[in-house]
Length: 399
Ligand code: PLP
Image (cartoon, rainbow, N blue to C red; front, side, top):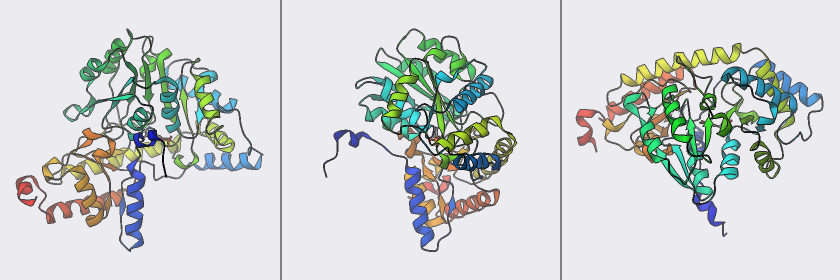
């Protein structure tokens, strides 16, 4: 079959491929500890499930307005205003099936062939995939492990050119768990202001999953709101990945364009799912808060455990639910170690390079799994590295 040329430029998310390989091993009778997929292992809170079921029974089984039902857009505008200290209105909100389509739509709406887009690398793989898909040039910005995976702001500011059309920020950051501090955001905003057509896509999907410190949205800095698209959603904080519900809060003149793309693709987000979203935002928040507290406990467990394993070092992530240990002392590449962990130790994680070329030297382990499973994964990793002699002093000999 002859595919469109642009398909050759489209990337993917390897988490789904690793999950399929892990399931195939399980079908052969092997046990696998799943640390590959980025989704909470908690159920959606009961009152949200109830609201969704009731909505279906009440007849929310039809199309809705393309950018979302008014009740949900109002609830999102209210929530975004409270959390970010700004005053958003529903016409700045577009609801989508998951947060991911906001990347797709905003890049399609704003970025032309030949433009440049600055994005985090390692980073969520869909950023680079979409930048290439539209024929733009991806300009990667690295993270500094020595500075708790803070974004290299000097490099970012130096990379801005007259062709830069968009900067993608993600804080807390997948895969490192790093956050962008207010002072760094202020420097980015200073560098952006002189470029009137430069837009910011601020992926804040993990903004409520932080373990200390403050989350700052660049939209709150002077003159930044009118050029920022805030991507957020329900998948992570309300454990609703399968419902497909997310949104963008964006400048008023961009929202109709993004809506037009939605009309040309999904039409709208599932009606009952949107009602469940209203219940999530306006109902009790204790389940979400308890989940974050549990992730905090697990973060300490996995980071502590990884640092005790000879051959690995792991920074403490400040948000999200991923550990990103440095594996260079093992002498293997991140792809080799991820494969070995899966096939020999039955631990499914992702090679750092699944998040871009600068992820070499790391693996990503999601700690959205029980404390018992995390302890088991640590035990298996340690046993494998010892059995294979993949430790600093002997790494060279082991290759
Ligand atoms: N942004 C980041 C950084 C993510 O890690 C994810 C999911 O893994 C998303 C956005 C998209 O989430 P969803 O489309 O499920 O809302």
